[in-house]
Image (cartoon, rainbow, N blue to C red):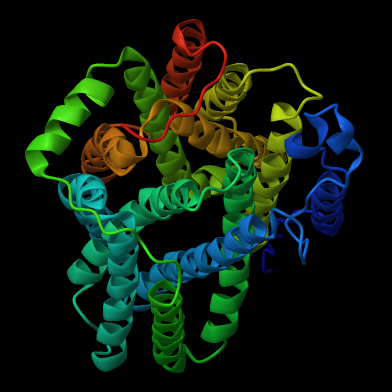
Length: 460
């Protein structure tokens, strides 16, 4: 007599997608823009400006600049998302072992440490637009390589895509802030652009997952070429947008002068050290999450549709991004540092519970959604603090160099934990939780040492 083993399949409720969509929609529709609520004079009676405004208002050029930048940033986000989704499928398609996959991850993080960290300094020296141009060229190169050679060197692809991820983390933000300052737009629009960047990035990552799954279809061989063609097309469009976009004021900074400025304004400022440590801890915890979330959530033993869970995470991050402007508007008395203290504590608690080796899928799913909702608040908040404390001429180097210790720690845990199996997943997650708690402490100290009142400064 045969024994029938029933399998249990877990997947999120379809109502959750509807809830996240309408929650984001209502949060945006009733959003109290700081530019509209912070002024109690006669101008407060005027209509609050919106991203989707058109026409001849005095700030029309500002919103046109914002829309154009968000279009370019969305294209870059789709390119990043395409390779992140398709890369996993490609490694599995060619039958690479777990050890090989971990080795390629290690190569990528090593490239981020050695080359990605230096590109932030190069960004400040030659200008962020050229670095963004380099980002698109690398994507174009990888696409052409995979289109011409069916099975190109995975080492080269891993190195190139790791470098593009590093550039993506600082290049576009730095370029936007520099252009915003050079064109003389309203400073209060920067905070609005920061949360919109997080919102559109998450939405584009969801769209890239849908697009990748559609390209893969049922024919794996055909999908390889189609995916590369799509990447080439997006990279070409981005290069055209960059070429025909805003004119960058030519500037060339001497390395000696840059080193002196960096030593004086970054290394010599204790507040920047606190901000950099918080950024490094967040970068480490996010990388740990994306490496370990799948093996953690399937430890329950039930079958889980990971493709249905992934959009919920990014949707939660979109919802968290829409909460950010409510927190910094005139309706809230919280400083940015206070918001970050509470958010980092919540993120640390989420990772602590996960590190306790809790294995119920529903609970882990809820915790991970909370983690990404917190990310939606933290990312634009840190960008706002960078605008207040870091000069534009040093912004790229500060961001990239702050990620170097996080990438080094990830590489160490990958080698010791996943390659040699000397460190368990729960231990790695516990370290990320500890880092998030220390980041909360840094934000508390930064509030005591910070500027009173807030002042944005952009030039040395």
